[in-house]
Amino acid sequence: MRQKLAIPAILFFGIFISCSIFIREKHVVDKTVKVDNVKYAGVRSSSYGIRPFLNPNGWQHAITSMQNRFEGSTACAIWIVCVMSGDRKCRLEFPSDGQQDSNIVFIDYDKHEPYLQYFDSLGIKVFLQVEPANANVNRLIDLVLNRYKHHRCVIGFGIDVEWYCEADSPGWGVKVSNALAKGWEQRVKSHNPEYQLFLKHWDRNWMPPTYRGELIFVDDSQMLKNFNGMMDEFVNYWADYFKPNMVFFQIGYRKDRQWWQQLDNPPSDIGTAIAQRISQNCGIFWVDFTLKEVIPINK
Image (cartoon, rainbow, N blue to C red; front, side):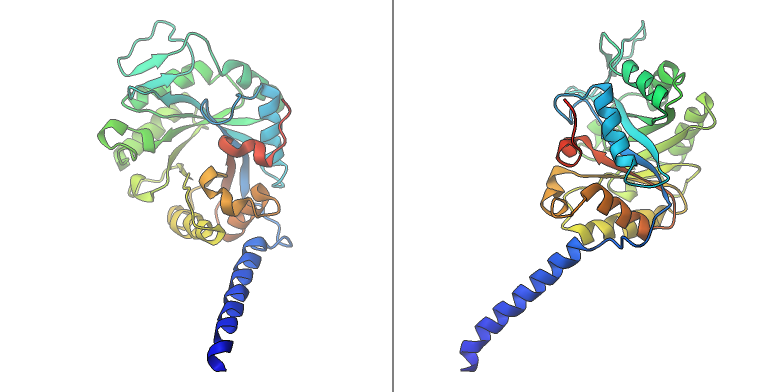
């Protein structure tokens, strides 16, 4: 008799545990606790993310829809202006104006000027980001900021370390030394002392070992097991390690859809849960790959 009852008991226990896990995943945010440390909220934009690429009004709607979820935050975008091309060169999305560099290619029109002009008029803020590939980063800083620093919306510059000297370490990029990070930050601030530099990767060991300055550290991890796994990654592994420096988080990747789509309000629930668990200021950015799934976008 005990053996016959054992199987249903085990099944009942398994169902109970599964339901308990699901409930925890659905109620991970204490909505009675307000957060005031989400300084920036918005989206990440790239030429290879959303299709078709949104018009300025569409991006404004997406950015402010994210910002409205976090009281007191500033509407902001991580705005990628340079991507790595198939031949491992940096592809800047504006004309060369006579500039030449063997590791940089240009396009024959300025893709970003109309958007930055529009953001200027609305008070939206932007960090201009590059995927440097084999290009000299200081040269990229000068090329990008000399072109766009007249815009009020521009408040900083970003480097995706995954694509820094990517040919030397495919899929990971080369680790950033203290000296490199300090030099890049000084170069950015030479254009405007108020600008901040962010460095992005999913592995904190690719960040400068000890130099912190006013750097912002961006975690773009994906393929996380579940909501709690993301919290452990973003809070314990990343934010606690870099505090008191500001940290940004890119969320909403396709490979995490299986768990974030179960949440009532994925952008708000994820961002609020992160902010409730960390002590420093942060930024929450939904990636453009799945933007239309969580924010209605007017065509």
